[in-house]
Image 1 (cartoon, rainbow, N blue to C red):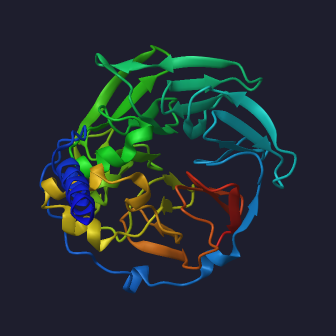
Image 2 (tube, rainbow, N blue to C red):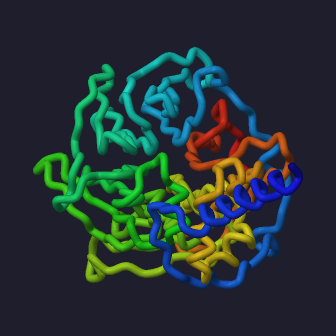
Length: 355
């Protein structure tokens, strides 16, 4: 009897090993070597400045991933169930504004008061002030929008948005990060001509988008490469791109410009040595992909936001290392003396006075 049990255990163990080594994963990872982790020191030294964050809007849903504010001071936030809620300026009286029936992420108001929405499943949308939804873009250059992510709007009305991955959708964002292929792109959309075109492709999980104050370039967070890329949209360098910041200490998600010389960058997580060490080992990344999600690395509970000037110099460095922190923070929006924080998974919206 014991021999039979022993054989059964060996067979089960062998099947588990076989599964971990050979089962199809859907990813085709490439080897890459991240730069040496800079550490949470110097400009990024830990503090507890984010502990001043107050939380409102609890009970409305999970994952108010991005935040925007209209010209009346009302606050808008998108949730994982497809609903976008509107709150009074003080954070009270949350009401449903619109339901995209998808997963809305990035939000930005245009000059006419329409809320431009990046819905990860439904593409680029527009909601009128009355809440009427219109689909603007679902396909660009013959490729369906797979993971419509973040958006910003230039003063001339041009809309710029990211398609984080042309291969994986929002449900499978970990797949794209573990594969580490340049599946992302940034797109421009002209609301007058209705023309949409890719202005830069081959990006490593193209995420947050922010137009510069002089309207000559975009900053785009490449989450999978720990960097921020500058894309020129006007002037002699139009169409060119360059690194704005690299080897960041965290995984960059949302980025926004506050109108006063500062780009705010949200880090939902600090970088993890284990993931960096897996970079040159694509086979092991496949093994990790086969593990149950409960055993895979999840974003830590650590609040982390920075504010940088137009040269990439760190001006503000805000942390909250406590287990009760408002985190993971995926977006930051500055408005009239406050910072507003969004999160992909938190039940509520964060807000604190401008440091």
